[in-house]
Structure formats: C-alpha cells, structure tokens
Image (cartoon, rainbow, N blue to C red):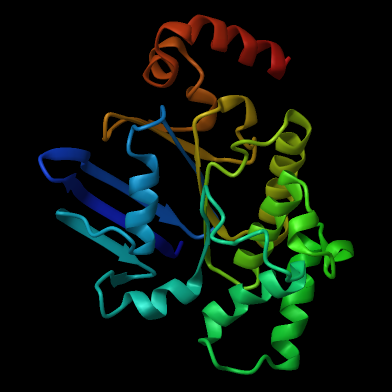
Length: 256
C-alpha cells in the first residue's frame, strides 16, 4: 500500500514552549485518521506542519515518498486539500460560491493561469460532491455556517487531492449542521477513497468511517489504535479531564 504521509519524531517549539514533542505517524493511501485531543493539545500545530505552514524544530516529514522541504512543498501542496478551522475568505466580498471554490483550482494550477474546460468541470463536480451545486451563484455572504463550511470543502476537493486535511470542520456549527457535515465527509470518503486526516476534539461528531484514531495530550501521542478502542475512560480522560464519565455515558447512549 502506498504511503501518503510519514511523520518521524517531530518536535515543534515556540520559543521555550514545546507545542509538539517527538510525534510520529504514518498514513497510507485510503486511510481515514482522526487526530484527537483537547483544545491546545497540539493538533492544529501538527496539521499546519504537514501543510508546511510551520517548520518543525526537529524530526522529519515525508509526503508522497518525498522529504518535505522548502523546495519540495510547492509541488506537494498541489496534492493536498486543506480545510482550516477558520476560513480565509472575507464573506463580505461580493463574490459567488463558484468563484470561491475556483480559488482551489488556481491553487493547483498557479495564479494567472486560465481555467480549461477540464478545470471548470472539476469545479462543478466538487460543488456537487459537497452538496452545494444549487448554491453556485449565491453570494458567499448569504450562506449559513454549514453551507460556508461545505464551500471550503468543495474548494479543497477541486484540487483533486490525494490527501485531505480538515481542522475541526464542525466547530461553531449547530447540531444539525454538524451531523450533516460529518455525513458528507463519510460520503466523500466512500466515493473517492482519498486519504483523510481530520482533527477533532468533540467525539460526538467523530466520523464512523475513521479506521484509526490518535490521541494527543500536551503535544505527545498517548494513544494510537482502532477507533473502537478509543472510547474508554483512560483515553477519554486525556481529552475531557474531570468530565470524562459524563462524556463516556453520552457517547455510549449515542452509539446504541
């Protein structure tokens, strides 16, 4: 099986503060991995190091079999779809959903390039896959929170990525929108079988298609295993602390 991502013993420090400590993980083609942890545990920092926005102070990252360096990241990013926790879009701008999604295609081609008929077809297909084709001409300022997040997913998909990275995609959404978005991600995974790494802290919304989970606490990996083995008091205590028993009971009820 082809290896998409390898992280070997990375450490990430900001001044004297160590945000990530000796973290390793491998992701193969078709894997769906959940990176779990409390807020501030280092999850987003790891994700941003994969995309090349943060440089580790130690260790090594390999993407698609090639060591990740300043020189190689330009081409590697074309194979990665990234959905950040906060959209880098000004929703007051008078532009349509389709125009925002198209930005993802320019990320693959390079700014200044003209979109080919193939590119335009991919943009349409990405909006369809994200369930927003009917919104293509709607101004982005006239969307709900869930619809805006689907736009970000469509923008990532139109790069036709081999690896999809999502940072807390259900954050700040109402319960209905959260459930709808997770269902969408599971359908995308079933259809495309791309490698997915999703950062989450709310296990109520964890996609059941995940075949593996990692829990990180204070920058260090404390669990790495199958999703079904995640839900016990010891593991969940790293995420929920004194509220673990309440969360475990709620999770048990939701799975019945």
